[in-house]
Image (cartoon, rainbow, N blue to C red; front, side, top):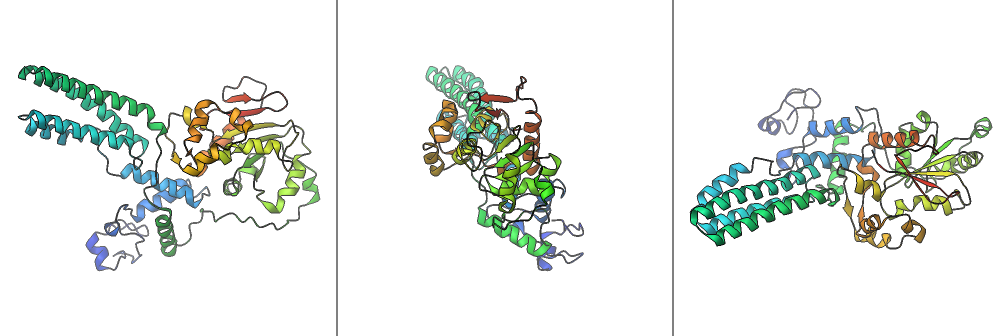
Length: 421
């Protein structure tokens, strides 16, 4: 393992002999992969993850974003059967079982079960699950060709029927799995407590991570604002469903670079919330952009903005729903980190009627199954890019913009961005 301080490559015996320190510079290693149980990482792996999620230390990020980022990287490294590597096991097993019809059937049945299980695994990413689904199709083709040839040579009609059914079943299962992989749920490879231990140890040894954000401070301490500033307003407002995402955008100067105000539905930042709202209400041409998790609470954000007197009750301002929405997740071709919980399923069944009616039957069924996706599963760079694209696409809401879908009656319009990235 290379030392992140001096770049010296230290072998296990070197690290052990020097009490977990670099032989060259004596810098302490934060992690020892050989002593880890289920998930193994190295110092360079962790350091690169921090550099990549922060775009080489230019963007702030949250601890949970780092957790998602590490989890995704670890899934790519996790042990899964490669696209063609399994043939080195599959072919010898079939060769040795060739003399026994039952043995031949058992070997192929076992491989089909393995690939089917791997294509469903919530511990693998969508790329690995897709590879295993394709393996089902490949092995189905091999079974059809090889099995039919074997049955003809053996002059056995029953064996012919069995191999045809098994081969076609494998191809069918592989095709079905490829069509549903994007909707399968996932679970973290490491627990949040395990990740916290890693993070604490890393910062204890290597110092604080400069771009990682603390929990947002939601204390209500009024801030004095220059009266000359309050005389102005904003043309755009970004409303987040959590203080965490609002803090992320503010920390990365999104409000300065895009000339907009940023608030959370919870009232963050409390110190300037009331003053900012007063400024916003002066602008009759204000455009509001909602950004939220794809869960029942997040889906209800636009409805909350429309019906809450503290926000825009009885107002005809345009509201653009940037996402995340079930529509975007169902339509996307790229895998998202979909999770599921009974609480989310119950909350989806209690959505206000106005919210439920704005969703398609497929979207509502997706939510009521307990599915949800968090914004923090995306990198800061991705969230900022999608939000900027949504703002740019809404400059002329009267034009035919294929990226925006109009929902609602005139005077109470809501525009939905159809793609999240």
